[in-house]
Image (cartoon, rainbow, N blue to C red; front, side, top):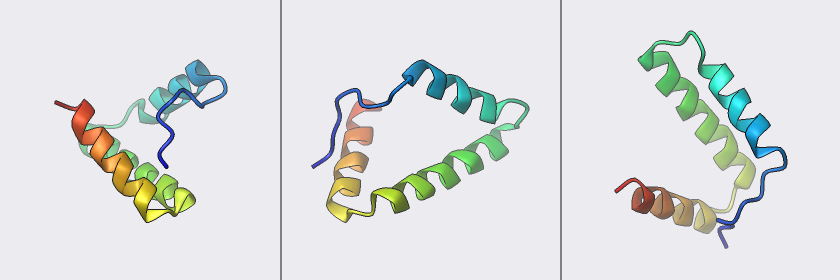
Length: 63
């Protein structure tokens, strides 16, 4: 089951690190970094049902 509750230790630090990773990248390189990160994290999760739930949750929150 997808955990959508806050679950990241030092969430502010993580967010800063994520923004820093994009610093200096153009839009295409930034999108490519995001895609690679998504695939790395999806592989780490590994559970197809959880990944499907995450996709649905992301689509719902983007509206």
